[in-house]
Image 1: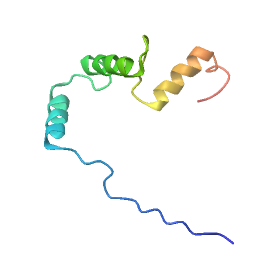
Image 2: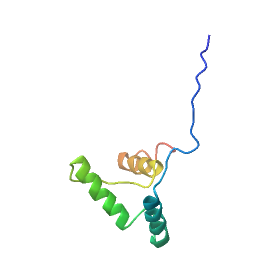
Image 3: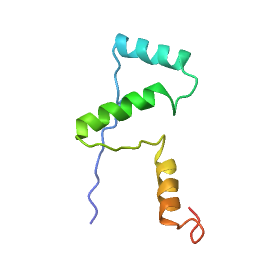
Length: 81
């Protein structure tokens, strides 16, 4: 006997304030790169402070992170990722 589960998905999971939308618009308009540069450094610095650690590296996606892990573990020649 299977039990049916109903998940009430919302149309939008995020609601942005006008200030947040202005910030994002200006960032996208003026940024030369979305995955590198000043915003990345600011994010890393604030994350280090929040986590109370000295060293941190952030990546632009989970796929990029997995590729770096594979390279560090020297698995890339043995497995297709």
